[in-house]
Each structure stands twice: as C-alpha cells, then as structure tokens.
Image (cartoon, rainbow, N blue to C red):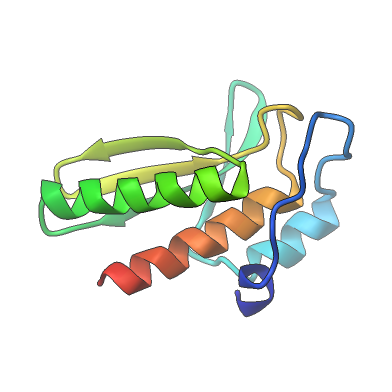
Length: 115
C-alpha cells in the first residue's frame, strides 16, 4: 500500500486506458480489504468501513470528501449509522484506472488515522 500512498491521481478525461487485468491484480494486492464488484456493467472497488457511531462515520465521510477534492477524483459514498461504504471507479472510463487504487489506499490510510 505504501507505493500507492505516495502517488497522486492524474487528470482523466476518458482518453486514458483503463487498468488492465494484470494491473488490477497487482494493485489489488496492495489494498486487500477492498472488493472488486461489477455494478451497471462497470468494474469498481468497494469497501465498507465500520465505526462505533454515526458521528465517527460522518467524520470519516468528510475526510474522504476532502481527499477527493484535493486529488480531483470522487467516489460514491454511503454514510449510515456505524458504517461508510466507499466505492471508487473512474466515471469517465466507466472502468477502473490506476487512480482508483491510489484513492483506495489513501482511504485506508485515513481510516487508520481516525481509529
């Protein structure tokens, strides 16, 4: 995960290629707690983080929001009592890109800081 944490997202307008199966396999080893899912025919990364209450979950959501703005890459976030579901994929590609793995690793780092 350290390798991904050191990287920044690159602007993606849809002209960059999506991550290959080999890249996905390699990057996934650095973020083992994330699940690969297919939603609306698009491959995505999803993880559910657990928290002791709604206030903690909301604080984490806000931290992910600040990260997303700083990196220019935005997830789907579902905040509920005691949990936050984070889903990363590159909307412009309708697929996964290297950026999504960077952001997943950074999301994990934020979760560790908050606990």
